[in-house]
Image (cartoon, rainbow, N blue to C red):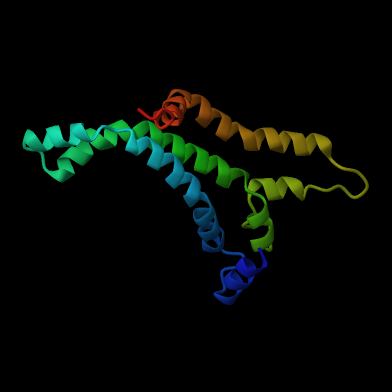
Length: 155
């Protein structure tokens, strides 16, 4: 964590949105590649070859055949990456200085009362912060299951 902080400080990205976006992308990339690699390898190569035989260009076979088959995996990967970035705490706490750029988990963690912990406000904020993710997952539940099982069986 310290080298990353020193690097971001040397290029003046502490307390900026790009200073948060770059580590999020860097640490989310392995999960993204892992999920998409397994699912895209399961798409039969014969489909692409059949499209070429029928006269489709490489671009057409990608957009008309491969991309629609990969949509569940892409949706699953996008949702899981969003949830990871939405819930991430350590980078947001370390790389932001003021409340203007803090993420929701950091803001909830910094709720304080003078003499007591405001548990009611903390729990209400946690419910409000969880609601968008829950709605998104419920809306894309079928795609998530399809995407997670797409690369699960090697045949």
